[in-house]
Image (cartoon, rainbow, N blue to C red; front, side, top):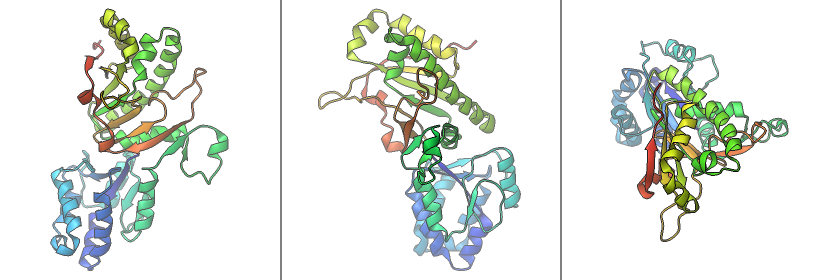
Length: 339
C-alpha cells in the first residue's frame, strides 16, 4: 500500500542548520526511488517551501534532496498530494487537525512528541522508516482466519478490516480508480450456469469497495471515478456479437444497483502469445498513485456462502499497471444513467 508521510519543516531545517544534511539526503534519495509513498503537502505547500528555501539545500553534496523537493513542489512526480488544510506555523496543531479529519498518516518525520497512531521518526531512524515502507510493498495474505491472525511471526498477515484500510491508504487521493478483471463480464452475464452466484458475491465485494471510496470523497470533497475493465474471450465472442447491446445493458443494470459511479469498459480479451497482445486475468486495482495486484478479482472478497475468502495482495507501481485498452480492442464503454 501507499505509506503516507508528513515532513516537519522546522525540524528538517534545524538539521540542515546544524550541518547534518547527509542524513536528510540519504533518506530523500531513498524516497526519490520509491513508488509507494505519498508526501502530504499543506494547501499552500508552506512546509516544503520552507525546506527548499534553506541555504544548504543547493549544496552539491545533497543534490538528490534538491531534486526530490523540487519535483514535489513542481508536481513532476506522483509522490505527493496537496490537501485543502492550511499550515499555520504550528506543526503539532497541523497534525492534530489532520488526525481529527481522519487523513491517513503512517509516518511523521519530526523531533516533536506527537500523539496518535502515526509513527514519528527522526531522520537518522532510516532503517525503521524504510522497514515500514518496504513491508507494504511486499506480498500480504488477507484472511480472517484466527489461526493465521494469532501467529505474531506472520508479519505479512492482515485481516479484511486491515485490507479496507490498505485500500483507503492507497487510493485516498485518487480521482480515478481502475479495477481490472477479465472474469467480471463473463461472471455476471455470460456464464448462465453460475450467474446468480457470481452476482451475489461480486455485489457484496463491490459494496465494500464503494464504501471505501465514499470515505475518500468525504475526505477530499472530490468526485471519484470508478472504472471496471473486463473482457470477452474468443469462445464467447459469437454470443456477444449476436446480443451485445442487451448483454451490456444487463451488466450496466447490475452496476447501477450498486453504485452509479461505475463505468464499464469491455475489451476483446485474449490471453496473449507471441502473435497476439493479451493477458491471462488482469486482477488488479490501481490509480495514478499506484495499485494492488490481487489473487482473485479485487471485488471477489467472498465465497458462495458469503464468507470472507483468503486472498493475497501485492503492491504494484505505475509500470506494472499495463494499460490494456492500448493493446486490446474496446468492444463497449458504458456508464449507468444517473437517476
